[in-house]
Image (cartoon, rainbow, N blue to C red; front, side):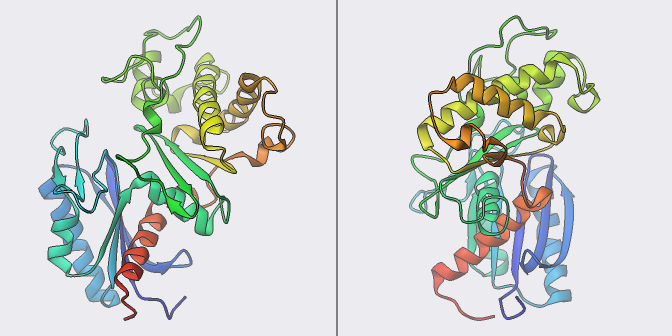
Length: 309
């Protein structure tokens, strides 16, 4: 890996920014967590750290950013590189790309944090070589990245899997039965992201016992979403990451409910005897997003035709 150029990577999240510099998954030279506060304060802290990392490790050839969203990914748009209509207070219409490009004068690769994660899992992790591939993270929010024909899926915007509409849970035992998304009454994020779980059940997700009825309900909501994705995108594998998915009983529950919802409609091993290999946790663990940002930087460098190391 040492003959590859150094790339700076930024996993931009609503709670924290994780920055790194390296050449690939086995050669990350330094990382740093920076709490997400205001855009100016956060981005200035990021720039200071990148300058320090550059002084200590040598110049980097590109920067990759995987960001929370929604974001503008259209290179022809006046707001390309912006976080757009995010519910994160103070971050609406924040320009990430121009600020970093002007500061460091290198190519900048930019995509959603979950598209970055699906890219890294495709290159180096649990989805290596599998196409189409889906990565879903369930944490502070719910996001999804999709890779099809070797390319990250863009379109009018980008996938917003967290806002897929799902049936309201039947006979819910939650304190507040309704979904908590401020935009939609009955979407995935409104039921299963960390803040929604806390509001609906009255306690934080990581304090719920393994046999709490919330987990059955969360698994059911997720299985409905995965059924829709399986039927529309026909993925080779779906990877489930994020803090909520770290509950050891949850992915097995989701697998079972997905098979139940499909009701033998798809006669293929991925939703039968091989479902343990179809719905899986990330192969790169919590590093998926940061390594995906590094891969985005590499793609931006390749797109510019730069070979300088």
